[in-house]
Length: 331
Image (cartoon, rainbow, N blue to C red; front, side, top):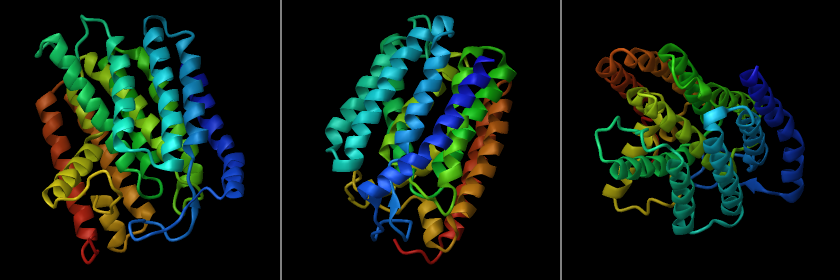
């Protein structure tokens, strides 16, 4: 009942909230205009996160009221999500420097990690507690940022959010523990589906930093909880495509001496669009790969090494496909 209620709040709040938001963004002319680094061709409102993020935070608050031991952690996550919503909207409108953005990400992730009991570790006791928390925090901050980086074509963030949310639910149910995060993960999936009503190609609105940054934070928190429940392999497998595409692209840009905080079109999925594929074709390819990754995550519950190996092959296959589609694309 709690899970259904959270999902309903997230879906309806997002799907119904976008319509008046869309009209307001048009009136204020808050539009993402195409440029040489864009993957779209028409001015499109940016700021869909102003509908999705509040709806998702409200759904999580609904869960927090009856979450028992997780309630304190959820409230800290809600506070962090609200901070990132406000900071990211400012960034959407005025482009904040990288330093303050990263500081905000680190503070909210660190605050949520402090709420974990000392007996609970992300890396299964392989590291001292302080190192466990520091490494988890660095990974979480990277995940927040890569989730933002990867929001570059119609539908891709909705597909990824729904896939990770669904995958967490499946793994937790199969594994049989950490069931308290099921309503939170379902709410993420429902919010993503509600947003895809408006963001599927051709998109009528873009998510913007006000959506992608809080989503990266909330999903990252759920993946941390999944790892703490003993399913570290699954927590790595579910977002494996995003992790691979963003990390490889970052290393390419560093090698070429680029300013990595500046916009670009070098991600595999962006180059596939430049090569002539439609946004929805690329999003469908990502969805199919993510469904296979959910299968690999399920396998990892009993055979971690086999699940990780299968996930590696699947991600390599998707990257190869996107690279093939990108032939002839400009840099």
